[in-house]
Length: 205
Ligand SMILES: [Zn+2]
Image (cartoon, rainbow, N blue to C red; front, top):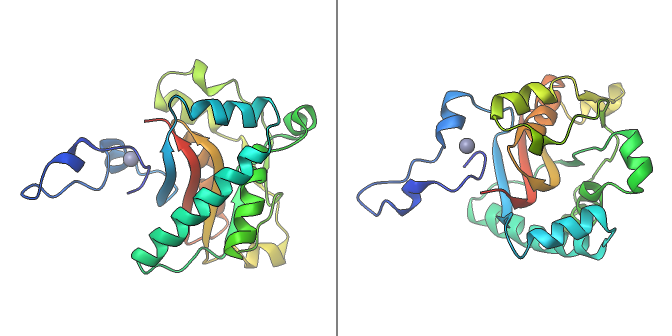
C-alpha cells in the first residue's frame, strides 16, 4: 500500500487477509503515504526506462504518462479518492539537467498533468546535491543517509500556501529503494503537505 513492493502475503488466500505494509514500512515509515506503479522494473520494460533516461527517447515519457493516467483514473475511481491537487516531478540538479537537457520525471509529469487536468510545477523542489549513483550503495539505510540534504523547497509564500494541507503527487520514472522519493516527500511534508503519493512508471521489485 505504501511503497508498492510486492508482498508475499498477497498470495495468502482468503483465510489470511494480506498484510498491507512491508516490514520496512512498518518499522520505519517513509515520508510518502502511498505509491502507484505501472509495473516492475524488469526486462524488457527496463529498456524503455533506460532509453528515456539516457537516449532522450522522450516519446516513451508520453507513453508512461498515458498509462499512468489510466492507472490513476481507475485506482482513484475504485477507491473513491479525490485526486492530488498538485503534481511535482522528482527534480534533477541544475548540473545534471544541463548535461542531459531534460528531466525524464518532468517529461512524464507534464503530459500526465495535462491528461488529469491537475497543475504541475517543475521547480518547486530543488535538487541541491548530486549524490553518487544509488546502485553503489547496497543498504537502504546507506541510501537514506546518501539522500540527506539532497533536496530543498524552493517555494514563495503563495506557492507554499498551495502545498500546505494538500495532497501532492510525486512523479518519477523509476523507483528503486524509494529513498529519493522519501527525501522529496520529507521536504513536502516539512512544507506542510498533508499527503504525498508517488506515481512512478517502474518499480524495482
Ligand atoms: Zn513498504
